[in-house]
Length: 114
Image (cartoon, rainbow, N blue to C red; front, top):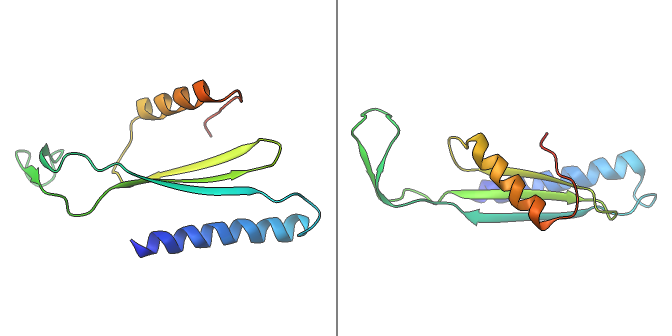
């Protein structure tokens, strides 16, 4: 999991360098930058494995915890960019729609998916 911390560090350093070389270090206000991580590991047993190898195979135990990670970059005037990464093989469009609905209910800003 240490590689995730390194990836986060590289991502944030890249953002700062892009800002520095694009606009100059002192000519624009600084970006607000944040990260978040949440454990999304499901049940540890009795879960089918979606047909991999054997359709009747049932999982037992957790090899490693699954996480959702968010990287947020915001301007002081309120515009924000959020990138979310899941340690999962897929997420349905319904999950995306429900997340956007919850964010819209908590924010007065318009949200769009790109």
